[in-house]
Length: 407
Image 1 (cartoon, rainbow, N blue to C red):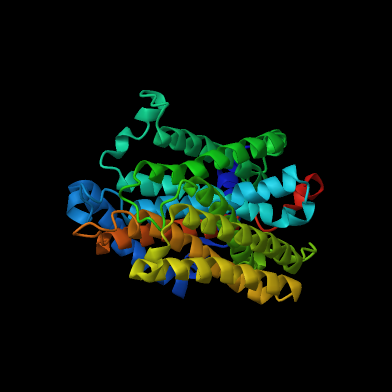
Image 2: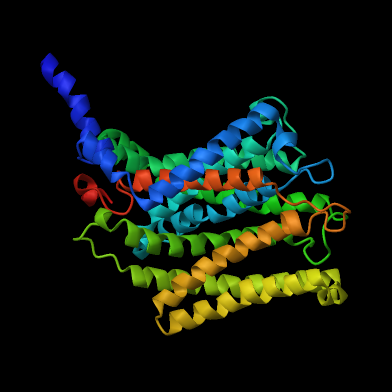
């Protein structure tokens, strides 16, 4: 190979892999879309707000206090983010452990969503911590083996690495590294088993954090079963996210789909909807068991009680029946809309536990500042842009032609 080809090859690689085969000026013009304009406005406001937070500290930008040390960034960016990223281990276990190969087409999008979800959970945590540069200290130096947060930190750290390795084959196919891709694929079963173990631990342990503060939690949301609630609701959120994300991705990234691949997305949607209906039915009754155990029936006839009942019936029992009806009558649109509503319901539950029910009776209840809200929106926007960048370039929604026989 001569020096000229050495100089041309990197440029050709950039045109093909990064610019999607377009000339630089054409690629720049393709970026001027309404979605990108809105995203740019959010980033233009949000990135300086994040910089301001790190320059002047939490006190200057948040409404957090010694009474309310956890707010929107923990409730939304961390607790909700971890739940919504649960589709990765749920679908990986479905396909690689239980052998339901008909769901293989949605495994890679689910793993990518899970991987990015956990990456941005860590980013949200870094924004929330007063001294984020000390985040690795408990992992590598101060072993608090009796701490729930220590276990959560280790599990999230390890599971981030597992998700990276599960996502790696798609990136290696994109880069054309066949040998490395074959090595990465050999790890699939082991990574899936390890990922299920880690997810089971930290999804439930996030709920166990609130077992430490029974006197600060509203009795309707506090329960000794809260670790189970967090784990089951994460499974539900994972299924809902896979249904919603797969439907949206197949609509928005139609050009990335393989026209020769026969993927029955409706069948996949109905199958996942059936599983979600069963889980919601079980979830409703274990939540009801928690209510019976707390003997907090009298509190149902209060403003908090009315909101609790709306959560129970509007976000759990209603979607349970809607999923069942949609699956029975093969109404895929209803199942997809219900999936979005279910995801919202899990977000509402996590925010109820972490914000509404936590310190519910203090004199000055916590209300997030506008910078807290803007920061969360900015982190979510960056996550969506990253997902879109990867899907437009790597074989996520389609099989790479050179590796089709290896899938």
